[in-house]
Length: 178
Image (cartoon, rainbow, N blue to C red):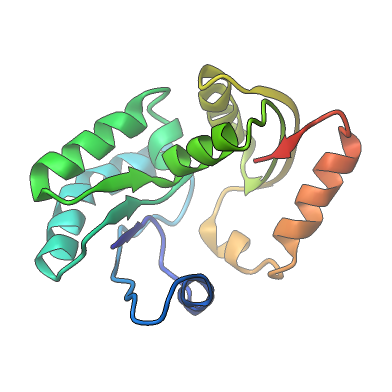
């Protein structure tokens, strides 16, 4: 199951099905986030319990609560709180997107990172602090400074690659990209 902060796009579903074995189904519940603000994060977090109950009731065997701001706006360790909350509520294994990213970066033994982000500077600063508290050195941030999801969704699909490549070229001493 996927708890998606914003309205899910069809490309996310297509991307998911390109990476998993045939027969795996993605169940999605959205939280209605339109911007990366404190108020929108509060609203989304108030809807998480209902979202995960709906996913588990409909057969989700694993739940990922997505959206970096949902975690980073509350600070280091909040991801573990969300995971405990979900697992206690619906008895289904869970993670957050930020937890999964930190785990992947640690597995790859990456420590000096550049950040490439479409989000606004406030959201990026909170993510940077979270990553630093997780043991990473953030040596450069390349931000598109977008506040609204509609502006991020309007970007070409190639933007993520382009911005990440630019960030890395601007700080080649990095050993990884977030």
